[in-house]
Every structure is written in structure tokens, then in C-alpha cells.
Length: 260
Image 1 (cartoon, one colour):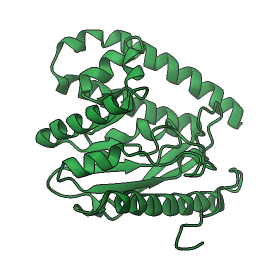
Image 2: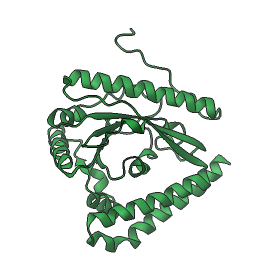
Image 3: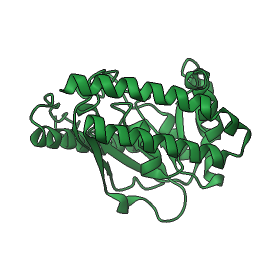
Image 4: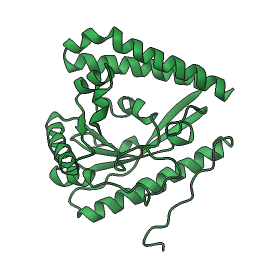
């Protein structure tokens, strides 16, 4: 049944996405607010497909940690394409730090660019950092939250931070602005694996954690973020396995320097 659901969903998802990109081409001539409306419409259709075909839903926890006023940076685990389809549910109108190659996807890239993202060239570290800092300053003035995946790419649920360490881009944003960092833990990879054709039913958990306050030294920022995000994401994956025994085995908690 899981295979059949995945087959139906994947075919429907890519077909609707391609069709939407074609139908809504004229909206590219309108203001960004129109593209935002189109994006939310597409995402609501995708979520309808997920719920009714895959039997996959989500829950959000810790929303009390999101500042009521002012800008902030959300640093999220990135286990799956699933969380990228939920960012506008979680944050309303975020700007996303992403690789600039995504802007080259036919039609889809035009919509991404119109939304206003922070696109970086990962092959040029110096230029990537400059793009991140400049983009963060612009979004700070626009009062839009910034979403960044600190490991820079999607990682498998069992990938350790030694294999895919946290990158310095988030520290640069943090040190060049007055925005706190809100960690966002999740367990999406247990249901919708990295580059996986198969999608499992169940409930994905997103959990916002207490903010990392401004003014910390760079090394303490990375350590605080990594410790909180990794520990909570593993706990959420363990919870998913307990609730849905058919899922794969989650990773075990990593030892920190203090534990060793």
C-alpha cells in the first residue's frame, strides 16, 4: 500500500506542479504579493494530496518561542523536501537561503526568484558569505523571517554532524544583524526520506526551540545551535518510531564534548 500511495502521490505532485508553473506564468508580471498568494495556493493543494493520498500530516510545537515582534533567523534541520513545502505554513512569509542553482529550474526558478530568496553560490565560499550577509540585512529591513539550513544541504536521518558539519553562514548572519536564532527541530526524514521515492504515512513533528540570544561569541553560537537542534531532532525521530513502528530505526544521541 505504501508503494502504491507513493507512486500515485509522486505522479500527481509533479504533474500539478508543472501545470501550476505553466498556468500561473502571467502572475510573474504582478507584484510579489501575487506570487506569494499563488505559492500558498500550490502548497495547500500539495498538503491536500499528502493528507489524502499519503495519509501524512504534521504538527507544530513551540510556537511560543517565535518572537511576537522584530526579525529573527530560523535555523532548521533539513532531512527532506517535506519541510520546504511547509515553510509558509510555519512562518507565513519567510525568505529562504538556498543554492542559486534552484533559480535555474525552468519556470519554477522564476517563481522562486520573484518570491525574494537569498540565493548563494556554494562553489565560491567568499561570495556565498557575502550574499548571506547582504541578504540578511535586506530582509531585516523588510521584517521577514529568514530560514536557513545550517548544514547547507539535506542530510539523511543517520548522518552525523562530523559527516555534515554546521557551516559558518548562520554565524555571519547572526553577528552582522540584531536577530536572534530560533532552532527548528523536526523528524520529517523518518517519513519522507532524503531523495526517497517512498513516502510513509504518519505525522511529522516540527518543534521551535528557545532562541539563541544575541551577543554570543561565534563558537558558542554554533555549539549551542548544534547541541539543541541535534538532540531534539533525534528525540523527535525516536518519538516517531514509537508511534509508527514500521518506520526505520532512528539514530542514537551523539556524544558532545562535555559527555566524552
